[in-house]
Image (tube, rainbow, N blue to C red; front, side, top):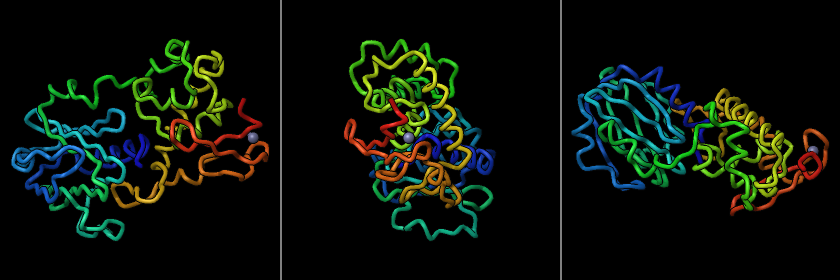
Length: 277
Ligand SMILES: [Zn+2]
């Protein structure tokens, strides 16, 4: 599933290649995504210029001329690719190309999504703040306000596992399952620890390392597991840098103790029983 680093990598690629281009035509071939694509999306979007591309949590916010904004979420298996004539489409089954935008230079932006859990909404910019999807999201992991003080405040009295806390989108937006295991390994905190008992020094490490791990992952264009490919069909390279995720029984990179796998909050989690207290 695309996580924050994958979405941010995509945002950067599209910001370079698609901003300034005008959408001359749009075709919705399959409207049944997580929410039904509005019947007038194609008509409303045609003729608009892409002015900027932002991101909030895992939502891409494509700002259009005429004060509209298109919000895109990739769901479990979605991808938005900017395709030139020589685009290598072999990783994308054309059957799952659901929405297609033709730009004024003849290139196409194509939304492909085999499992159709993604989202594509076009709305006036002023209405974005009221969207259920964005309301109540916690700070971005790179924001100044996401720090040890903040984590201390929100974790006191919490009985749940620290891993669930940092994956809670209301606490911090955009930390997914893979990265949560990696962050806690580097912060030397066992993922099962009761959030309310994690020390101030440990929370300080978690806050700093969260931003660090996500930045590194963005630099590697994210992690590729199965279907995810970026806007140019390139896989992410972060998978080779994972230290604990998906490494059950393999030796810890720090101490050679076999990595353990457990399920926390129905998600597979990995940790070193020696390094992580
Ligand atoms: Zn270890």
